[in-house]
Amino acid sequence: MSVTIQPPEETFCNLDTHQPLPVVQLYVMPSIFLVVVILGLPLNLLSLWVFFHRLRRWSRSTVFLFNLTLADTSWLLALPFLINYHLNRLYWKLGLTICTGVRMFYHNYFYLSIFFVTCISVDRYLAIVHPLRSLVLLSQRQTCLLCVTVWLATLILSIPVATMSLIQTCPGSNRTVCTLYILLSETQESLPYSTFCTTVGFLFPLLSICYCGLHSVRKLRHRPCRSDPHNKQRRLLCAVLVIFALFYLPYHLSRNAAIYIRAIYPDNPASWHYADLIFALEMSFCSLITCVNPLFSCFIGGQFRRELHSTFTVMFSQFSGAQVASMISKRTRMTMRSRQALSTVTPVCAVPAGRP
Image (cartoon, rainbow, N blue to C red):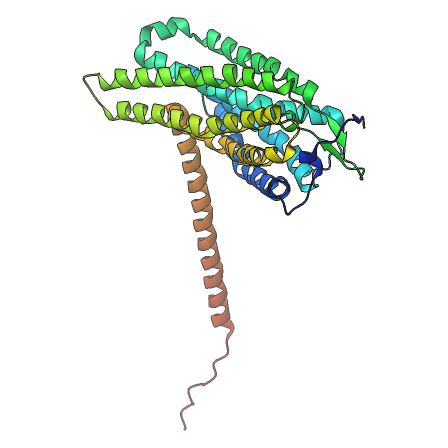
């Protein structure tokens, strides 16, 4: 294991459970991560199964939803590394390479999710406001190229995380920790990088989603025929904006607050604790987005929703049929046994023979 010798970070080395931050790191975060894996992994694996085995025709929305589900599933498969790390009392045993990969992928995932949700909002906007031009602006081939571009762009955006992820040895023990760049005391690199990621990876997508959502709702509202599908579209666009702001706005605010406070008060670590605590809680809460994203597939993809419903219907019918058959078979066996028992029982009282 390669170890970087440098001044230790109190945030990772101080595990005094009388303080709120160590309690969150040792108990709250692994518990929430474990719940996320238990709930999110089956949902996303089921979504991938429907994408691969049930959907015959893929629209633009289907392609974006598939990539969003693929990003969720990949992140959920990497999450057990962090669960093990926190359950082992922040003792990292897997080396610098895996530490760097996990931290980089954790950072990369959030922007994958943000960009694909933005693509879905733009696709809905084009389909509602510019239905004819959307066929030219976003063909099937261009949609696939856009998805590849998103994966590559987020990968490039997360490369600096690799240079800021370190293995440190805590003083007085042999415990090594996998640091998180946001909670490092030195902010020369993390401050401009976090600001850039917030601007490019959050503010621009947020403005795009607001623009697309407001114009789409206005277009639907002015249509002469206000059918139920139009109402569903409006509710869906509003829900996307609310969920986006609910998960990602507090995450970026708390992340930048933790870094900016370090830059403003570099010699006063006691002033960092509340910002670190809020950010640690927000990290846990924001991971729940992997359980919410499959709902986009259900509500946005009409074909996906129908196929998923039919899959559950078949599974339920097969399960119910197996239960009914088992009950009928059990009753049949009980009836046959009772009949056999009656046929072999010797009468207790016999009718007395008549006297001559």
